[in-house]
Image (cartoon, rainbow, N blue to C red):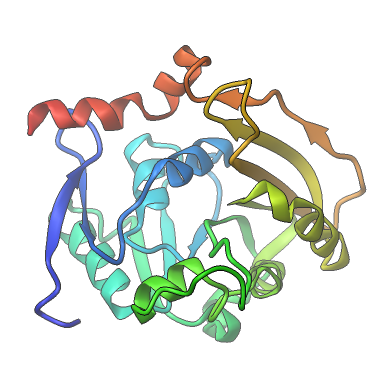
Length: 246
């Protein structure tokens, strides 16, 4: 990793949990919402694709929702941050960072034995919007190295029958994503919209699909970040509380 990159500790709760982040690899509300939506179980064989600083796996490990987690990313900087966090928090026996392109996964991940895959993918299709001149940030936001097809193809190879893929994305791409999930035999089973307040359009959609499942989609109640206070506090209250230590 470029040693000139500035990194810092980001607190995850008021009990001392943290992770390392950088300018290129930080996180926001979307990742915490996805971690909660994934409804992970301790017995899950779990992988996070495009893990970045590892926020989703580390959030699930913090809450004891999974026993172990694998985080895959194409960025050496991201893997460095995740590895450093795991080492300093004594989690090297529970979190396993993998430097890999999800379009060319190592053999140990293409087993068809995993039960849960999460991914917070780039939201912008290649050629749409204004591309960031910073190549690392462009990769994180635009589908230059990771399209929705790439995510679905990778997840299909990794998941067992009835294994779950949970992703978050922009609502304007929902029909495209649902269509491709069915096409790739990861059937959409559950979706939830997220808005700032009920009077405004949603800015995020959370989607769960199951490999080789029958059709049948459940629409969950919309989550308002300002009006569903109790649920929002349960989702990331500990993260906000962590800042009281700093």
